[in-house]
Image (cartoon, rainbow over all chains, first blue to last red; front, side, top):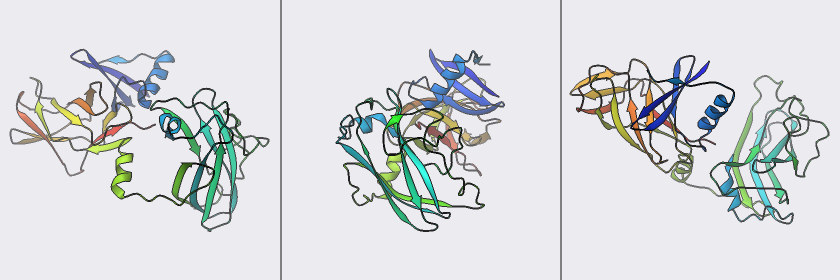
Length: 53
Length: 260
C-alpha cells in the first residue's frame, strides 16, 4: 500500500513516499517532477498524507 | 520520451505538413513479425502517428520513419514530456484496434493507440529484440548516426538520473540520529529530483561508524542543482560533529531521479 508522510524543515516541505512501509524516496514539491504528479493524483483520489512522527 | 522544449525548439515546423522529423535506428528481432509503433505527442490534444516495422528473423534492419508536421500538433516550451516514441513489442487489444490507419496523425485514445499486433514474438519463449543507433532529427531523410563520446552521452543521461556518495555533513540533532548535508548535482537535472537510497547508508562521525537502522532521507530546497538533505535513523551521533558518509560493504548510494 502506498502512503506519504509530510516532513518539514524551516518552513519547507518534503513528501516521503512509502510502499508497504518501505521508504521509497523524498519527493520535492515540483509540478514537473513525475513523482510529485503521482502524489497529486493520489491526493485527488481522496487520500491524505500522514504527519511526520 | 523527449522533453517538449527539445521538440518545440528543434527547428521542426511541426504545424506544417511539408516539414518533417525522421527517426532512424538499427533493430533485430529473433522472430519475424510486423510491429506497429507510434509517435505520440502529449501537449494540447494528444496525437499519435502509427507506423509499421516489418522484420525478418535474426536480421539487422535499418528502420527509417519520417513524420510530417500537422496543424493540430502542440509542443510546449517546457521541460515536461512532449513526444513519446512507443516502440512496443506487443500490446493487447485493450490498447489497439485493427482499423487504425497507418502513416498519418490521428487523435491518441487509450484503446486506439495503434493497429492490432501479431503475438508471435510475445508468445515465443526466449525471444529477443535488439535496438541500437537510435536518432531523431529534423528533415525528411535520415543521416548517418552521430556518434558521441561516452562522456557526452553520460552527461545527457545525468539530466534524468544520478547516483552519488554524498561525502561531508554534520551530525544535526541532539538525539544523535540525523546527519545534515548539501547535495550538489553533477549536471543540472530536468526537474527538482526525487532523492532516495538504494540501501541503508553508513556514516563515520567522531571516528565511529554507524549504519541507518532503516532507510530514510528528506530533501529540501527549490533548486534542481542543490538540495539540502537530512539523513536519519542513525544512533549515537554527537550534534555538531562532522560526519562523512562511507561506502559500506554493499556500496549503498543516494539516488536522484528526475525522469520524464
